[in-house]
Image (cartoon, helix red, strand yellow):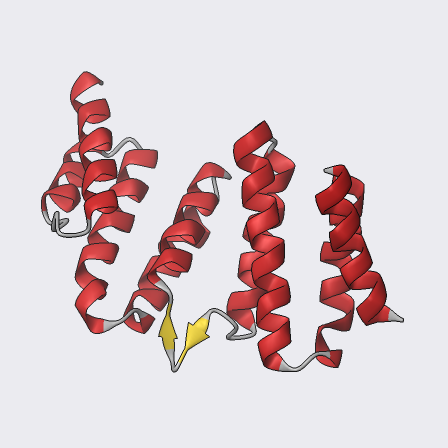
Length: 173
């Protein structure tokens, strides 16, 4: 039974921190996604994303980073990261960060161009400038990165702090 095996693989991945089970979970999710209602499917993707990011942060294994990015991409393609037509700003930021960590620069540039308009209007400019700043930093275009980071409003405390950290890295370089 696909639904049972999917939850079983996730449970085993969680309890044994076993990447083989998580790989089975990710593959099974892709194969049986049409058998779940959208709300449950959204939760299943979020579970997969959270697990992969947690493991990537604990072990810094690039395969978990890639898995998280792939699951995010699948969820984006199926419109599962949207709530009433609005893309979560946290998903947006995470997808840019994962793509840059993996060196998927063309994909990140395209993602920023095509998905910024799906953010809530009050977040579009700040998150676009932040994402472009991170992109420019990754490509070592430091002057352009600084220009983008200057436009990041510091009302978003975590974006502001991260922008300042990257600015310090640029000044060090």
